[in-house]
View 1 (cartoon, helix red, strand yellow):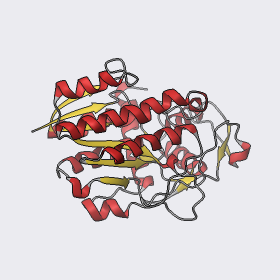
View 2 (cartoon, rainbow, N blue to C red):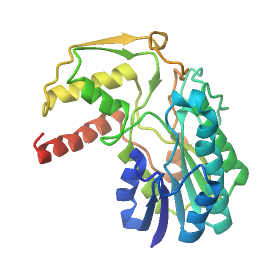
View 3 (cartoon, helix red, strand yellow):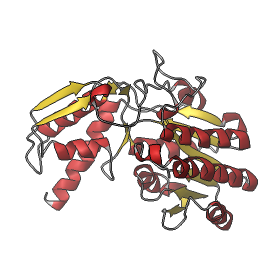
View 4 (cartoon, one colour):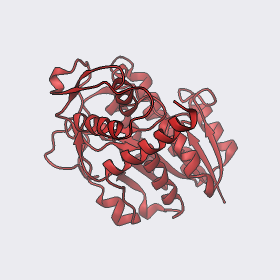
Length: 300
């Protein structure tokens, strides 16, 4: 049985990891109020005291807009603290799994990004995540750096939950339609991570991997699919949204530049581990099935 240490206990991915990895052995999940990722000594101490076989870092500074004026803190959490985890993993012989982001790219490529493409982040958040990637690579050891995109869940703050709420509050919405990617259900990330953990990967398999569902869409397409499912599976508060207006990124008020192309080629993951993700629409249906059951159970 494996000992697994998870950082980011209350986050979307870590929430699912605690379920997916439960069959693998003993789990300790740490929240930000238990381990301060701005204190490198605390990060090192919890790893040394628990002596895990696997360290899974699902913690991150994810406030993309706020990072523009708080880059030092974002870099500490997404970069420096990640380096400490990687160093402790290598020192102790633990395997390290870390989640990065499509935001390490500038979005200017025509097709899907591969792991060989050179990162060029457009914003502070992307730079902070790239710092974490670079430290992991410099330190080495047995590690997987999994780049994910457009993560959503029925828990926490994310685009999917925001759209579900706005569908019951607004008749008209304007949604960006020129940024392309693949919405990724946190449960799929956690389940695939647990499958990988059963393989006990080594140095030969270590490296960067892209992890995204099949298919592609825009934020407008994602929102449209959410509303379509909600209307077919109507439950809870009445759905009043009627008009969804596609807009350009330049029409959306934000101080943060985001990549317009977040498509990621996941062939390397399939070739190395034999695993792949389902289509994003199928996963969205499954995620809403879970939400539907929650509403039914609580009579909402």
